Length: 175
Image 1 (cartoon, rainbow, N blue to C red):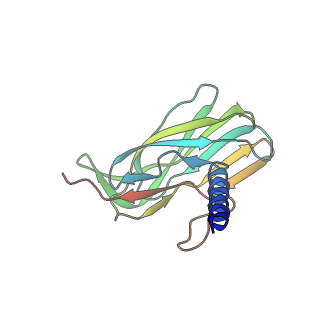
Image 2 (image 1 turned 30 degrees about the vertical axis):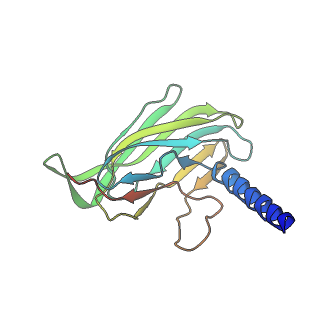
Image 3 (image 1 turned 135 degrees about the vertical axis):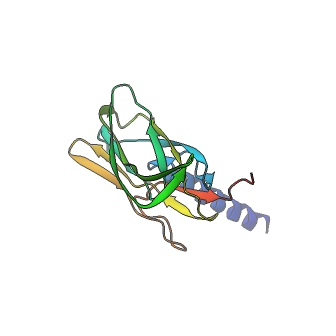
């Protein structure tokens, strides 16, 4: 019986190790949960290139309701934002906001496949119910090839091959 438990434990540890390896193998957000309506420092982690090629651009699309976006410049990379109209108006600091940053792009840099880096921005998350999952689709360009981390999560289904980084909203703090 001890032998069976040891085998089961070993198999379980192997599954956890495999899952951890898979989770770290793609572009992800360092903090995966945050309070609804809070300011969020997004740290986008890029652990490798595209099929061995050097990363030359990282582009992220912001989900509806994420407002007040301020990307951090990165030495050696050009930073650009795309602005657009929001699907609805949002209130922030006593102002009504109907337009803002919808995409961020860091381009022209060079992140070799064997190296790791982070791309950072600050934003205000939407005031939605706890448990809401916000996907942040990312396209990682590597010269003439790309990895598209854009697969959206589906409840009850396993994570796809190229999942979009996500943040799950938690309850807003009582004020």
